Length: 344
Ligand code: ATP
Ligand code: MG
Ligand code: FE
Image (cartoon, rainbow, N blue to C red; front, side, top):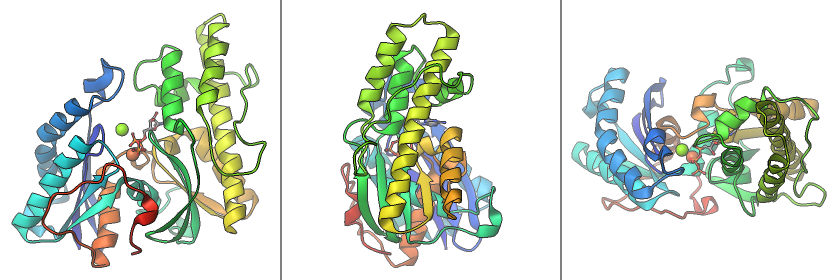
């Protein structure tokens, strides 16, 4: 089954074709970062309009790269939420219309399920012998809008173990970068800067790790950075040192809670997805933590940690294969609890 996947939940237009026999056939991404940079954040109406401009050309490009014609498609998957309502409607409208015209089924995909299943889409290049992870496992979802620990009992059966009470981890990276003067969106740049920071020059707390529980809080850390930066000599080296201490605090906090979640769920396989999953220090730390207990951590390749169409095509393919499909109306769900999804 060849499934066209469409992602338009925020500021990235992503399109891909996933073939349940041959795997990922092609994928393309258009990022609106430059469009939103001058406002310092995503402007919803501009995002919707840019998806309108880019989606059809991107679908043509992806089909051409996959060597397929549009009527080779057997199903269409689209992100129906959570996300910006206008942006979601662009993808849902195009997906639903295309499926109707081709007379193939369409399926609505939960954006965070897309992220969560991305590590199951292809073999782990760093560890190809061990195969793809299979439930039950624990998933850490760390993106721009979410920080969640989820027990995955089966594909489609998700139990929330813990989540952030304030900022998401990616949001904390972006806001911290901004307050030290890095251009939007600062998360990846802050991470790059942390690589030049000296160990031990600064130290920040590991929020909510000294009491039981699996919830997170990252907004206080941001304030700690603000104070340290304000009272510092503000040199490039100091900025890098603070970036390093911030990154270590976030990574340490995530690792401590992941280990607790594995204990609570009684398993040793951790799956990590979402933009912060591209962070090198986080990848190394979690890999070491699970190896020490005889388990493993599975990540998507870094490009599939952040938003992309491939994860939507893949998640949609699993649901279409299980017989799930939508009726002909165009419907989106900007706020959507993953625990309410049907099992596959
Ligand atoms: P959500 O999926 O919750 O709706 P989103 O789609 O905006 O949010 P993603 O695209 O998954 O989020 O991830 C983007 C986030 O990942 C940004 O906050 C960005 O700063 C962060 N990020 C990307 N690369 C890195 C990195 N190397 N280190 C730390 N953070 C990173
Ligand atoms: Mg994004
Ligand atoms: Fe995302």
